[in-house]
Image (cartoon, rainbow, N blue to C red; front, side, top):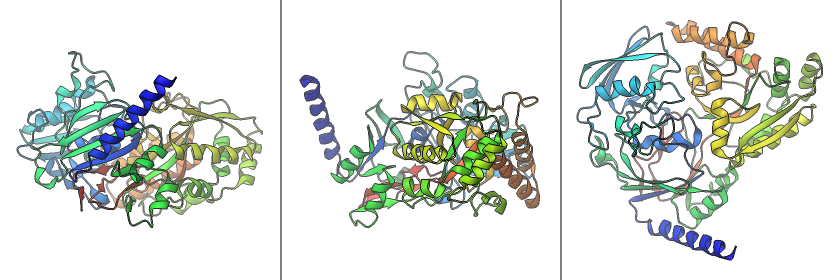
Length: 513
């Protein structure tokens, strides 16, 4: 025991020494709680995609939700029926190993890699099949199997990846999430990754926009808990703490030595995923009762310290699909209405497991608030904290009863809902047999989702998407709690941090003053 403790102390001293030694004005030192899931850029998992995309060029970029601009794409043209898009790539782009990042790589990424090469759990176009025709080395036409009304958003998520990254060092093709390298064409390239410890990048000198990148090196340290990460920030051992506890973020708001970065983008929503296949949750009235019982104002205040906005709506008022009927549930909840719904359902004895990441303070607080709210109306909630990787596995395999999660796009285009699998209009794990077992509200959601994707007029689009969102509220297989900004806190001399429309931090323009 003494030997292990001593070795642990020595390791901590060495780590802190390495962190302190990195403060040279050209190295960005970041702290994050927990490791990434994989080197796969399309992993639809919160601890993974937020940083990893800095190693890749997206086709389009939408900084601070201010409008789309080209990144890997120099220009693009979407057809009037939303079934094709022609993309012209920038000339001279190469991947980190020198391979031309061109239309041939785009075609491989969009078609071949989905046949088993590092397959993703997040379809590029939300499950719509895409084929690519190479017009010339820099130009490709992407044809979709059916209209996709939110094509630009998906192009801003699509990242060019070199096929070599899916070949492991042992010569085998990487299974899903088993890549041992990352090869993109982005402004930074991976130089070292030690799972559970750290990841280091360096500036990619051959990037097409290398002159705009002032940071020479990025060092990401994975902390076991938020308290250690915040302590490292205050000790000057890291420059940026990603997703510290909201209470700490509020504490830093008026401190001139620190900057609290609150994304101004589409934002994330804190949600609960409710599996309707769980015994006791098959009746939509029970799921609705859960929604009415939750005090969202308490959730937002206790967890997000006033930095979030409580809402039961899949779209906040700034969304074109917003409709007042989405706001029927008061922010404080309505326990009496919840009890009435349970009476209508026959007063079932409901006991549900609530799964959340064990190292996520916000998720733990949400679980505790929801547990107390449901106890008040007679529903038992058993807290089920899981290590992050197990949590993600349960999420992707849909082997949970109720789960805390987040989703992007809550106040953007409703097609962004498919970034979370619970909103897939086809191939949904909760509803495997749409001809027999699908709940009516899900069928109504799918029908209106498809109408919204194919709509060619503004009036058709608004009507379809509003009806789709109303179906979600009625079916209550997913519950919205509050907007959830991905806060970062940095030393005050750090400038230039920006983010994409999905709250993903971008380090390309970061510099120190």
